[in-house]
Amino acid sequence: MKEAKRSRKRKRGKVHKKSTTQAGDDPSKVSGVNQSMVSNVAISKTKKPLSFLDKMKARLSGGHFRMLNEKLYTCSGDEALNYFKENPELFNVYHAGYQEQMLHWPEKPVNIITKWLKDQSPSLIVADFGCGDARLARSVKNKVWSLDLVAHDPSVIACDMSNTPLEASSVDVAIFCLSLMGTDYPSFLQEALRVLKPRGWLLIAEVKSRLDPTTGGADPNNFLKAICELGFTIESKDFSNKMFVLFYLKKKEKQNSVDKEINWPELKACIYKRR
Image (tube, rainbow, N blue to C red; front, side, top):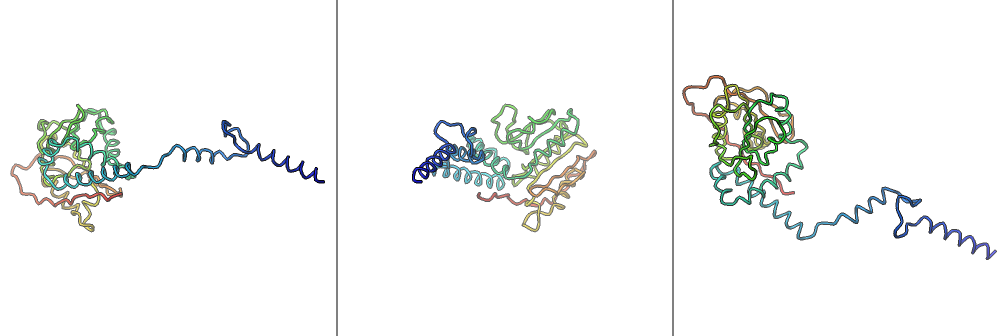
């Protein structure tokens, strides 16, 4: 009986060894191994946790972005242009932080605007005010004038959004995609009016909280009323998105011959939360 027990123990030991992965074995060919467990183990081995230094760098980068973002919302376009002329490297810091924030948005306004443009004639000439990385120009067949405070790409024109080098009545579509940031934002819209052809399109995507009176934002009706008094008509409004609003307007065929004082609402700064 003792011999029989020892024999059974030896047999159990052999079975156990067959179900164990040895160094050099292919896990996919070893019986008894759950493939999802193998892949999870592989991921855990290759994915290194962030070091303390990496975490500090990310925190500093986020802090720089929030500082620059607040500055752009609380200074004039001319001041912002001069600031980035003196510190061009900070423009990259700002846009890296901006792209990081956009990762948390379920839908991006530039994608909706791109789709809208693709449904229009490719012959329309576009001015993208505050173009950032000029993604819109790369996404459509239209001729796009990409305008921003700094030109890190040859296709981008560096300028103040209230004083662009574009000729009067030379553009079919003017776009402000989250770029009405200066304290003098009405002058940006006046510049759009100047460069647009009669019946040209004005598209504005803006952070929703800036136009929400219940959270300290401006009344969207007062905002649109001011734009209409400037020389536009409202074609459509889209409040369906959680993060931003979209306005589609057209330049009036005939402009007012007498300049009228417009009561522009103040747009509060959009301050991103620390993540």
